[in-house]
Image (cartoon, rainbow, N blue to C red):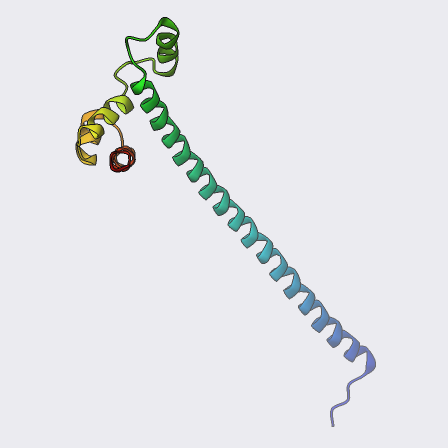
Length: 131
């Protein structure tokens, strides 16, 4: 016959309780770590979206600079020089090529900009021509 004393039962139950507390701590820290990784991924995607927005703003700024008439008064000339330091910036040149009907690989090669930027410029000016 097997006899278990009260101290033995106490130690066995203490071991079981400590085991469950250890499991709870393990899952808590694992959950916390996965939440941190999720936040990092979310911030990375937000940073990527902000970079894309910045590229779009650069393209629109180049379009504005390209559309300012060159025979305007001096205040517009000053504005043009502030917006666009180089009169033949890659974006202004890409916009002119897109307006003439060039496709994205052609624009990217001619202007030295990335294919994604060229795709965006061509898409913007194709939609502007349709409207």
